[in-house]
Image (cartoon, rainbow, N blue to C red; front, side):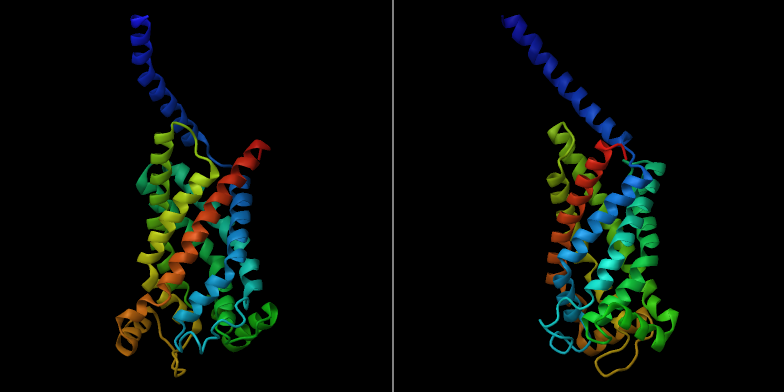
Length: 295
């Protein structure tokens, strides 16, 4: 009996090691199909952008040149929802398809591959995200008509097609560093938790990893978000137009103090932490369901 117990105790570590290896191998080999990443990303993006839209509005108004009250305060917090809803599905879908394919091409468990994949994904997604952000944020700040088509027509009439891409460089300059921080942290947290459990993660595990990694990345990149918001709104509180990232940065620091670069920090961290929880949890749940259906 003692010998039998000793044999079992000796085999247990090997069995657990094999279980961990099998789980890691299954995760590494599970390369999402283009269609699965597209559908799951779109569904996750729509769920988050629509449900958390009021928090995004408050964050934008806190960062506006004239301040929170002048930008609208707590009134009309759903202004710009149509633009957000219209852009959320293609934006998130583009990010995940580009991210997943780049990551698995370069090596799914490689941190450098994750950083590069995140950069590629965000750059591709910005082709849709920036026009949507321009319409949405100007509506949130009360600078254009709250109706989607009317607001978009106003931007087109006053600034031409280029008006939809105002702040493109600043947006990429915010999104890429954000993703370069968030995605490797997310992948590392998922890998560590998966190894600890010895099994694949449930959607709520992935959601918690997304919450933590998103909140940290949001805090670090808040100054970039402030600069991007100011560029998209176009001018300061006196109506003097901004002229590029360097101009926004220097004028904000000079006229309002360095602390202004952290405007909306609490709202941004709360919004993206909660958004990360919902977004990555929904994405993981959607990919699991789509995989079961052979997508």
